[in-house]
Amino acid sequence: MTINQSGWRPTTPQAGESGGQTFTGNRALMLEEPLIFEIGSTETTGVDFAEAPSGKSRLGGLERSKAIGLPGLSEPEAVRHYTRLSRQNYAIDLGLFPLGSCTMKHNPRLNERMARLPGFADLHPLTPVDACQGAFEVIHQLAHWLVTLTGMHSVAMSPKAGAHGELCGVLAIRAALDAKGEQARKVLLVPESAHGTNPATAAFAGFSVEDIPATEAGRVNLEALKARLGPDVAGVMITNPNTCGLFEPDMKAISDAVHAAGGFVYCDGANFNAIVGRVRPGDLGIDAMHINLHKTFSTPHGGGGPGSGPVVFSEALTPYAPLPFVEKQGDHFVLVEEETAGEHHASSFGRMVAFHGQMGMFTRALTYILSHGADGLRQVAEDSVLNANYILRSMEDVLDAPFAKSGPCMHEAIFSDKGLPEGFSTIDVAKGLIDEGFHPMTVYFPLVVHGAMLVEPTETESKATLDQFIGAFRSVAERAKGGDLAIKTAPHFAPRRRLDETLAARRPVLVYKEPQRAEAAE
Image 1 (tube, rainbow, N blue to C red):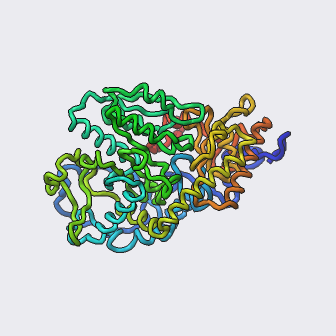
Image 2: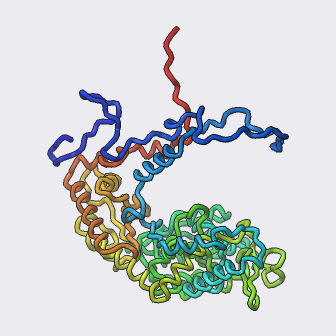
Image 3: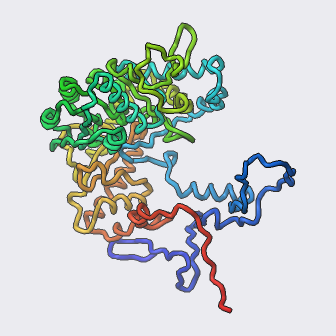
């Protein structure tokens, strides 16, 4: 350690540097962890197998011709390696994730226990319908809750993620337009405050994308939207609450205008956790909306496989929803597929996935809903909004908050780099937070805010945790505003120093290669 004008700052030498001693890179109990290829030898294995009996190959000429090249580790070596790696990762079980718009929410252990029950965890996708009636009832109950909470007409449970759900909704819109003979509607309008996946999804589905500007208050410019509507517009993709953390008060007027012009309204429901139990999107004129189960209903991101992004539909789009889906017929549940759709579902745009959905996500989400109840889900929204506003009002005197005067924020608070001294930027504040023990917030998004810092605490964080985060956030922001040069080289206490993120993104090294060994000259 050395001391400079700003106080104590670490100057730990990197591995191999000299100064009278050799530095290994280890820091107390945090060991410098090599790659697994650098630990084990490809010539050995940690497990002994009996000699395989010879027999005729069934690989059809695809047999491996050389060693597979995987390192051979004993069980203790393997366990220690991955345990040491896990200690270098930040996790929701360690502290607050302040990421905005892609929340890492606490996943209750009750949910995990239910998802691991026999009959759910080991359910094979090809199980006969009569043998998985309980699983179908779980899907049906969850679907009922999602339709009820959103005030919509139906729901497609099969999409595997939020962006997959967006595609589902947009394909239903296209199918509805095709059915009405309105193939000329090729434009989807996307406000500047929408999630970045919205324009990508629209383009992927074959639509042209046009931006709609935001007002100074961070909301959709209603007049600009109305001025652009016409016979070539298929609809609008809008995020509400939007990516600035604000509710769109003109949502009903936007929907009415789009419907009057012959289009449909797609709502990105990733931020439904801010309004669940308080606002029903169906009452606002929404035609399709995906729900990120990980944000609103606490399922993990992925969870060991695909995630889940169910899509709720208005009555106008219900006939075009995808197959398959669960339907209750008397006391029996059936899976409606192409062979059994019949005339009643003849307008479906088709199938998006091989099977119906992600059973683990459904089980977790329904467990979360049932453990909260209707009043508890309402409190989810109220607490998430309360926590975000607490952060906003606790930080607005030290960091620029461009929409602080637009009224209360919803689920997330947004700040900008305005007011930081020359040479200091958002990335410096984010890296400084790592030294304080917190994962950085979302940075440089949304694009409508210069040097954006987007913070979403979720409803699961206590006031004590928020106070700890706010104290760290204020400390880093004040040091940056005071010109503390140590912030420019943060983090100092993390397993790795600041990386060249641009180079890492543009030229990633994804394949391990054996380093060339120096050989003595003949």
